[in-house]
Image (cartoon, rainbow, N blue to C red; front, side, top):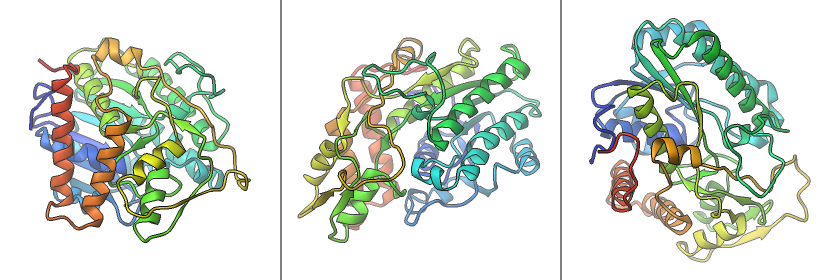
Length: 369
């Protein structure tokens, strides 16, 4: 694999919280391919099936079962690992679930983040930590332009509010305990509406389609007119890696948040996504339930402005909407049609394709020569 980050992660100990999740498992594989020694902390495997199991992430990382809500256990484990890098992805990630269980959502997303920040205070070595929150950390009033990193935090649902609160906690700890000349360097990554192979979470449009279509059922669409800045999982991950490599070499971006998403003019509806996804599957159907939906509030429009990442990290999205849908659909077809190519190998092939496309498009990531 081309090591486009100048070997920053090679032979480094990297801790990923939430490594059993969708994004965490993809990040574990990519970092392993970059030569990192990956350790993962998760409370459990969130879905069945899962990318973590099907791609054999457990075979390439040190797998640790731990609840980030338990400070002392987390602190003891992190101190024992002595990481060079930390990527914090562990979270309760579902908006609709947050309405049903707000306490767990707040404890995991806000207190869990605070526990990791407190843990890093005890780490007596150089460590670069990237805290992943969400595009939903913004107080979304559904305006037409993209949110900037300086816009107001907060949100109406428990998930969004818990992520906004986590951001406030991160900012407080950076200002109070982690000076620029200290051992710990911290930055924040914000992204949302990530799709790609291996996601089987509840109440997400691509998994809903795949789970229904794979057994010949129609998929129910709550709001087919809702628009989202869809992006492949590799897009924000390349951003997180770029941010980590830049921060590792310089403290200039210490404490800074960054948005990662597609161009603001790439904002397709749920209906457009499902229509394009369906072109890769036979005899698929869907039902428009928008007139019947009486569930909790879900935003209809949310965009991010990524100029800051473009300027400071030389980062931008590699795949457009059609390529994103194509690679997502091909991953699931490889899985369900039981191809001779293993899930692990197919995942690595997509990472290589994405990397090569970035280089061919002259996208210069943070530490790329």
